[in-house]
Length: 179
Image (cartoon, rainbow, N blue to C red; front, side, top):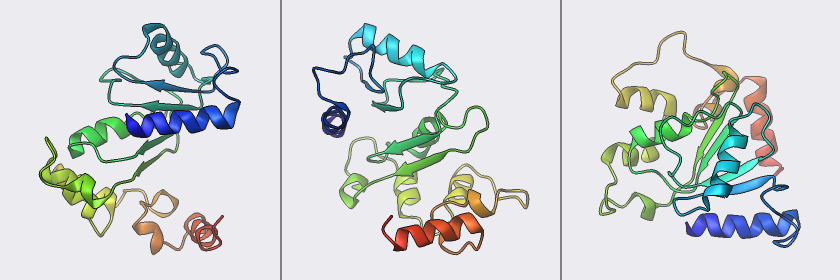
């Protein structure tokens, strides 16, 4: 919740202040368990559309199974969920219509402490993995990467470091130039 509060404060600052932004004109929103039911319904209904007005939604895990937003293309975690199963369920909200999507996971070593209530070894292993993240996820669930698995510009962040496709090379150049 602390991350969401800071992000919402920053979004209000960028988009014109608390007094100018209402649920009827906002392009960003927030979903959490004690959210005003009218605001929550407004955001969830909007996200169910193919072209939602909301471009940024900060949320906890309050939006559970059955939520099927057709236009989400990016999921960003500011810390890891408690398990890889939860992570897959949460990042699975993106790309529901087959469009390209990305998942970004930020964490610190403190986020991976084994004494955190409920954190499982699989998510710790995933975060500390030093090879293809796609292969890691497949292996955790007992699968192997097939020869028809995506290559090139569909690389994970680890594989993109070695990839020679044009998209991955452009990303590396932009990163080096701090763009």
